[in-house]
Image (cartoon, rainbow, N blue to C red):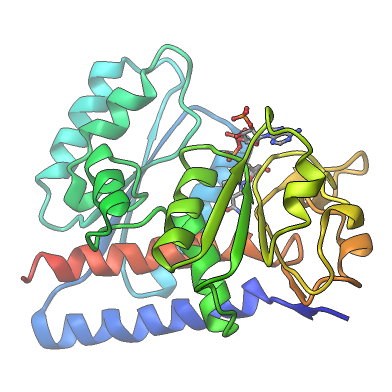
Length: 283
Ligand code: NDP
């Protein structure tokens, strides 16, 4: 029986820590951390994510602004909005909800956010700092993975870590953060040969592919720690991860469920990043 790594409970603890610290910041320095979220279009999933971020901000005692823009907004108008938020002293974090409509250049938009307010940690400057190990804003989902491992006292140093997936938002940064914690890291992707054999070497297996129940029991070493980043919907519309939880749980030593694992950590880390960006303005 594996330990079930409870992301929901851990996320609640982190959000409470952020709320307490934000309250102190307000009382002692007169500074209220502020987050601006820009959403373009009517994507229902994006709307739910943005609403959750807004509510989490309010609960944490932070200033929250949601800017809704129509699907056909000109790229220039979006860039102007970001330029205004970049110099708005009440805003310490700016997040553009992805995906953006096809006529808008995602890289151009993300790069327009000043690195000091890039609470998603996607700006090349922050990616660069993360790569060379300078403290910086870390991307929320991979940072949430590390936070879960640490809060469950799972040693990373010296462990064989296998990450499946090499996206810029999850796989690559997860690999870099595990490396920074002295893991011995292998990154797998769609061209990896004999994926199952590589995965079976892992003491810590992080899965971020986007394919429901892709990782089966034969791909997991007995006693391994399995972190499932995937969020997929099955035929019944239920949320499922990239790992076949029922098959893998009996052989793992610890595992994250979906839902209730990595998912809730992302928003907690966003709150934490907003707080840290606000604190950094005092330095
Ligand atoms: P991407 O689609 O950007 O990347 C998927 C990666 O998986 C790619 O690197 C791809 O390889 C690799 N891959 C795909 N098929 C295979 C295969 N058969 N064997 C090995 N590798 C494969 O996805 P994301 O990184 O954005 O997201 C991954 C999952 O995490 C999704 O389910 C997403 O919903 C979820 N997610 C969850 C978050 C959370 O808050 N919990 C936040 C962000 C994402 P290649 O590069 O070769 O194409």
